[in-house]
Image 1 (cartoon, rainbow, N blue to C red):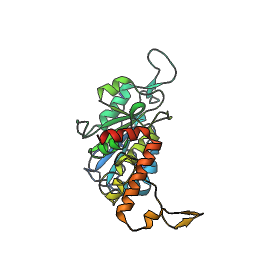
Image 2: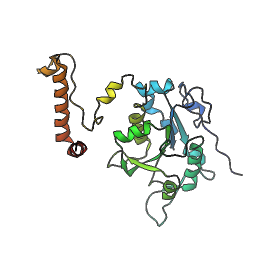
Image 3: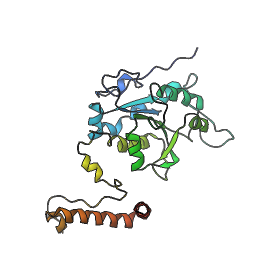
Image 4: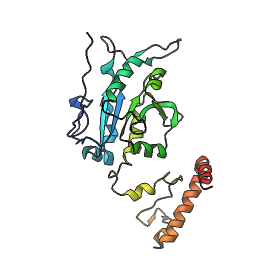
Length: 270
């Protein structure tokens, strides 16, 4: 008789729903039912929260502004050695994550979540996916939460992506050893947009990509450093001129460094 995987515990306080992470990996982080939550399917649950447990994201996690539930894929493995992969159909190098193993993990991760993918996206970190951008982060942040599948080896069985309407997302045109680092980057960009995470909503509006442009240069004290001064307009006290300078610099930097974004910006302006 096969062993039924136990549900691990969550990072968080006062969880009144099933959680998925072993108690020894728990942080002293309050979790309130109903907050935005990420469920991460991974062979390395100990990698979480990782850097997400630091700074503002870490404070938000401890304060219960968002939740994190790593799900150990190995618990769903087959046989004595909990195998999670097999050789590619048709031959070839490497190994592929099995659909039956992934399906069981995704079934557990879907417990209590909406079927509507707009309300609860299921994402697979993949170099062949759609490039991750700020608009995607905003979309994920407005959902109720999300499930992230971290791949390993040569990837996952295609049938899993089809069966669960999984959205493939890429951080760029390069290959990582696994999806854990990419998942943390995606989550950092997403959870910081959750109301209350940053405190000052104005800072989000002024960031790179907020209006389709890269951010303008930033300066602070001392007024002169190694012979380099702060642009006079920023110390003029004339807010209108400051805003105009910042806008012009954003446009200049975007035009020079990201012509693709500049072209899109011009098209959006009509």
